[in-house]
Image (cartoon, rainbow, N blue to C red):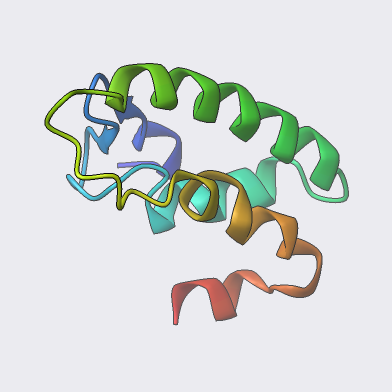
Length: 89
């Protein structure tokens, strides 16, 4: 399987391949490689995903401790200083 196959399953936003919270580590690495040198493009893509995830994950049963910002954008904001090797660790 390719990292490109690691796409979200909605409405829970888990990875269709590995089942981890999306974006999983494989998808994060793929995004960094796909958008090399264009961190703004990665952030714009992830921001649109975050907007959809907020809508999908906002349910009465939520306990409010989902840190969606860190999950979708926080790691990518610092991607300029993160190597793909460090991302796996």
